[in-house]
Image (cartoon, rainbow, N blue to C red; front, side, top):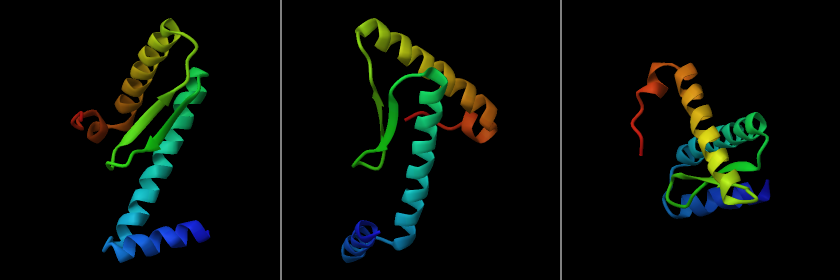
Length: 96
């Protein structure tokens, strides 16, 4: 809790909006949920974390390149299924 308060104070000192911090925290929670869902579905070590540039990073644990390739293909298929199930807004969102 103290760390979160310190973070908000630092953001306020830099002129950041508290609403933006809350919005980012909500997005981060959604990203963690998505990472857990993908990891559970695939049975692999996967995490999605906030990156410093406002985007996200995908961390994938693997034992060899063949396993990495297989895991990435399965992630791609799963994300496609999730986008299709999420509705038109997710399906038509532009790719970065």
